Image 1 (cartoon, one colour):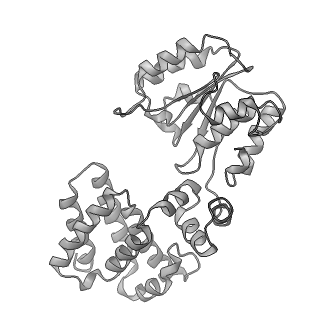
Image 2 (cartoon, helix red, strand yellow):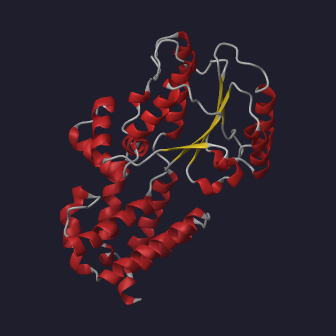
Image 3 (tube, one colour):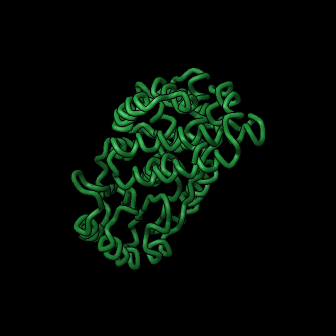
Length: 330
């Protein structure tokens, strides 16, 4: 592995490589950005580049340090994450890190700790970590990965050097899927567009065995929902329960569909997400007034919040579908 295995993010890579080459490695970093951009992978590649025995600003992948890191047995590298059967990173995990950090490195000039999804630290764990960030050993490098800075206490953020990751252009992700994952151009184009700048999301969508078929069923049902009777609504609700149990991004797809209709209605079809359904989207333009589309998007966002609060799906989905079907009557 090396930085080149992560698509795009050239500005971020250059910052990290300059840090290594100029020997200005900080004690604490916050790798920040949307989920699906590869924050953890970037942090691991940064660690490998620091440890590498051969290269100056990237991991060679072949030296003993690189191989140990790749096999998760480098004695100076540690990763802290939410443990199985827990919902947060516990204060005990941070205390264990604080004990271990006092021992000098075994093989390297540095000891590197990655706290993945740092926002999942309990408040007690965050306050405990703050003590280490205030006075870390000279050889310690602590890297936090996080989606939104607001989820961490401000004093932690202020003691970290922020490393920002950005959503990437469609062409960057498309080329990655072709070159690294072996997809043909048509498949790569579809997943790259649907991923909205997040290469890990593109890979995740592509790995779902029934994704294309499920997506087709949802789009065609919602686009023709005014023709569906009550029995069909309830039957399709059962289907939605099944696919969301498999982590299908239902609400995101619904929002993208109505967003596409709105874009096509206002600006033509140059920026359609679901481009492979362009004809269906164009044919749907006259079904809705602009305000109705805004109302539908608001409804879907509202029900997505209900979904995240674990409202029962067998109640939630029929109600949502009836709302969408009856929007013109509201």
